[in-house]
Amino acid sequence: MLRFATLTALMIAATSTLAQDVRYVSDQQFVPLRSGAGSQYRIVHRGIPSGTRLTVTQQSEDGDWAEITTDRGTSGWIRSQYLMTDTPAQVALDSAQQRVQTLADENATLQSQLDALNSEKVDLLNQSTSTESDLRSVSEELTQLKQISGKAVQLDADNRRLVETSETLRASVDMLESENQRLEDKLRNNAFMDGALAVLLGVIIALVVPRLWPKRKRNDGWA
Image (cartoon, rainbow, N blue to C red; front, side, top):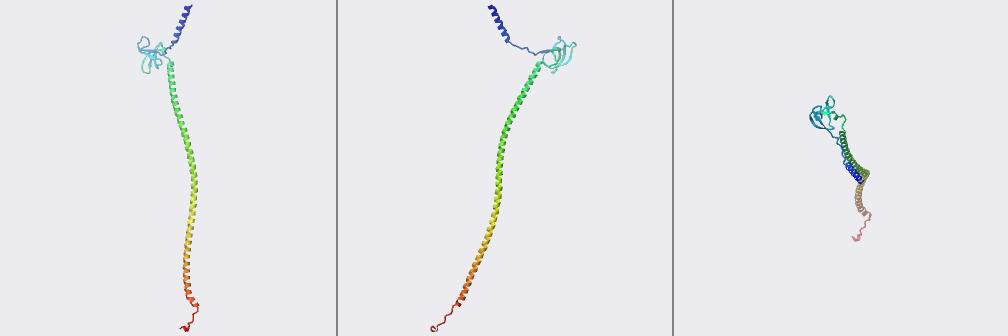
């Protein structure tokens, strides 16, 4: 009983060891290419890998062999059983993997372009914000300029009015100066006339007054 249990344990251990050694059979095949339609002909190419694209030029009478030419120009006979019209699974898988890699590269490129576009979008948003700020500043400056312009128009009107008032006052001053000069001339003339009249009056008095006083008679006793 003990021997049976030991043998069973060894078998289980061996089975576990064999189960852990997992392998896969490769689907890669290398088909020999011969100089004629038969195994007795010499081999002109020892290994055409599976998935190689071939062009069939003719077949043997029994159909077991086919004469082919590769895209590189190698010609010979190969068993028809190795030929197929559909794309081999490995080739299709490789093509699919290449396609996946191409799509991954394109996706990475598109992602890079998307990141660049997002970065440009952020830059444009920042520029837009800055532009809006500048626009507000310009609008405020324009409002101030309009206010200043309105004040400037008012100041110009006030200045014109003051100029007109100044010209009117200057004309009034000129008129007053002219009137003052006329009055001064008149006063000088009046003073001259007054002086002349005073002199004339003095002469008249000197001539008339002595005649108005009676002459004294001479006293003969004093003669």
